Every structure is written in structure tokens, then in C-alpha cells.
Length: 253
Ligand SMILES: Nc1ncnc2c1ncn2[C@@H]1O[C@H](COP(=O)(O)OP(=O)(O)OP(=O)(O)O)[C@@H](O)[C@H]1O
Ligand SMILES: [Mg+2]
Image (cartoon, protein in one colour):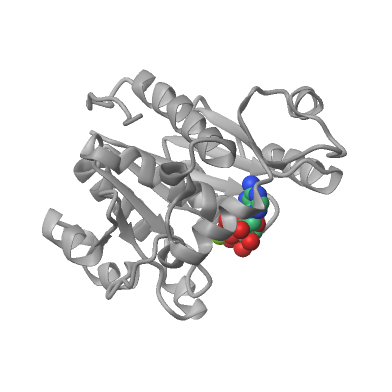
């Protein structure tokens, strides 16, 4: 059985999609782990652009069959990236979000757990029904934030309002650079948890990633690419501690 990892944030634009696509590509590269990414941002998601894919199907196509999801449904609905990552893209129109219920998301998570070692959810920002449902349905949560007081306070309120249980929560600090108003140590002490990773501001890596759809974690030896690979190793270590995760393997170097 595989695990589902949700990528969340209290504030928008902190790097969820960048991190989710890069983690997915690193996990899948070399075919070490069957990996999928579900972009839950109806109409507004850009995972396809970040991966330079042109998906013909999306999660809306699976909603009529959630009661009987079989591996061939997942195969037909996903689009494969060169790394081996399977993307279940978001629908084109934002109003499709209303069709995604807690029950259908739960069915998707169950089906993907059976088929993939690792499934990442790129979860929209906010505290809507689906966001809260995703927070409870996933097996591991990554919460992204940036090093500034508004993000820190929003993250604290966000984390406090979502009930806690024993599922792992990893904080990821993104866009950290010289002169940042809040340090990683301050963030850890304020939020009461260890950071899984501190990812640097790296405009050129991000622009190359966005322009050419090539995940920087697969392309760039240093900087953001290296930090993202470090995060993937930490996430994998936590996944391996999950009692029902039964996949073996190592990440490519
Ligand atoms: N480490 C980084 N260095 C430089 N730019 C970054 C970094 N991380 C993200 N960005 C930029 O920040 C912007 C937001 O990133 P991204 O779309 O991944 O965030 P998001 O949390 O998914 O946003 P949304 O809430 O809209 O879904 C993008 O323009 C991205 O290229
Ligand atoms: Mg996004």
C-alpha cells in the first residue's frame, strides 16, 4: 500500500505547486517509485505547465466512476511525465471545484494508494471543505510557508484550527534568502516543530523550471534543485516509517 502526501499552505503563492511537481518528479525518476500527482486546483492549477505536459484528461473524468475506480481508470486519466511521474490534472474551469466532494476525494485517495507508492496532492490554498477534507484524508502533510510575519501568523492560525492527530506534519520554509525578516530558528520555535527543509530563493532555477517545464530538482545540482532533493529524502524517510507502506527502493542521485 502506498501513501498520500498533501502539500498545503495557509497563504497562496508560497510554492506548493513548485514543490509538489518537483517532489513527484524526484520520487518517480529512474522508476524507483510509482508516483502520482493530483492537482486539486480546478481551473487555476499549473502542474501541467510546470511539467510541460498537455493532459487530455483530468480528475473530473473520474468523478462519475469513483465508486468503482480500477487501475485502468487511473491509467487512462493520468498523463505521464518523462520522469515517470503520472499527473492527474485539474479541470479547465474553476467552477468544477464544486463537483469534488469529500467522498470522491476519499475514493481517489484510496484508489491511488493501491496503485502508487507515493501520491502527492497539490491542495488549493484556504480552508474550504475540500482543503479540510484533504488535510484529514492524507497520510502525511507538508505545510509550506515563506519567511515573513504574515505567513508565519497565518500558518500558526491555520495549523491550530485543523485538529491534530498522529499523522506527520512537516513544515517547509520556501523562498528563504539573505535579509529575510524571520529566521528558520524563529519559525521552528514559534510553530513548535522542526522544518523538513529550508528552500532558497532561486529565481533563475524557477524561471527555467516554469519556462521549459523541467523540474529544477532533476536539472540543477546546487541551489533550489539540491534543496528540493534534500526535502524528497526527508519525506521518503518519514514515508518509510509508516507501518503500512510496503515499497522498497532508493532515490536516484
Ligand atoms: N524558491 C523559490 N525561489 C523563487 N521563486 C519561487 C520559489 N518558490 C516559488 N517561487 C515562485 O513563486 C510563485 C508561486 O509559486 P507556486 O505557484 O508554486 O505557489 P503556490 O503555493 O502553488 O501558489 P497558489 O497558491 O497560487 O497555488 C511562482 O511564480 C514561483 O515561480
Ligand atoms: Mg499552486
